Length: 186
Length: 186
DNA sequence: GCACAATCTTATCAGTGTCAAGATTGAAGG
DNA sequence: CCTTCAATCTTGACACTGATAAGATTGTGC
Image 1 (cartoon, each protein chain N blue to C red):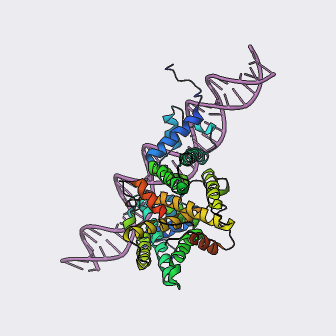
Image 2: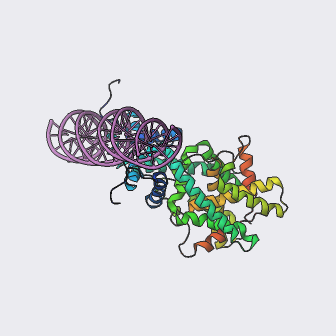
Image 3: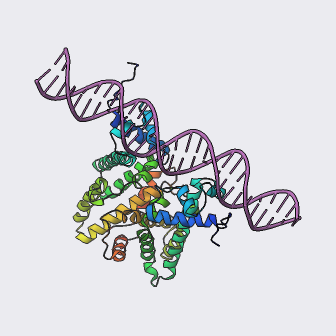
């Protein structure tokens, strides 16, 4: 068992896990394929059997984080007691996800071009938004605009919340609620 | 005159200009000090007489872009006819700046940690915001929350507008106005 | 059990950030 | 005008990176 097998057996998955951990700790800027390969106990060229190049690898990590993120959004909607506060709850978990994993933010929105129409978090968000807003008898154009406005706000606040001095450390959740609640969509 | 002078004479400034151009065209990801040095007609180690390292150089470029950005915001406020629309006008020029220079966005908000309290665009924005909102008899906490909310929205919309499929190419300005106008701050 | 495809290793390459040592020059002061 | 000094630039080097080619090892299907 102590002798290393020639075939790793699970390298692709383990590389992604290692990438996830590395980016969470040090960010993406000094991540190297060779370092991750060594972490996985494998030679420097081995990863290229699973990923065409570094860019492709990073996109795989990106996709993995995005699915974690989407899950958390879905979870917050399931646990929402008051339907009127669904936007706030969504926004809070949105912002808190990146507050928990600050280095994910710039990584996610720096690498690769995202097509909003198929971007899972946005698809989910806009579905919820459409439900809520059409129940409020808002027309199609209003739905589209308000959805984009809300999405922009949480997306922007997530980035801002990582800068120094934007949110107190005390009661971040309440602060987010206050900020998001300070504008009205109706 | 055709013989190259040993001393360049203006290298620091020209490096920043070259960096600006390079990032605007190709982004920051494959920018290298050596390439820029060659563009400036100088050996690969020359730039290190002016910048401690690559990070410091990029921060200098960042600062330069930030000042261009701030100027544009200020310009839009000066040219604002209707004071009620000042938020919209600010937001439009905010978003349009990055629509004009898409690659600046991820560069600006990826490198270096920004302290909002001294970040010129935010200082300017929040000054304007304070003026407008206090004239509307909104209390201190409301000012703070709404300012952050508006800032988040334009910041987020700027990033989103660079993704595929968010804004039509037709009348971007009108679209931005519609989105920003679809939520109310009062 | 054999052939093949998937996976991994061992070189190797060009390109990178950065530093040390030395060459060249402009500027200041005699 | 000449000397000296600090600023600037070049050359040469080092370790590290992404990536590829050639070959070794192994699981899998026939």
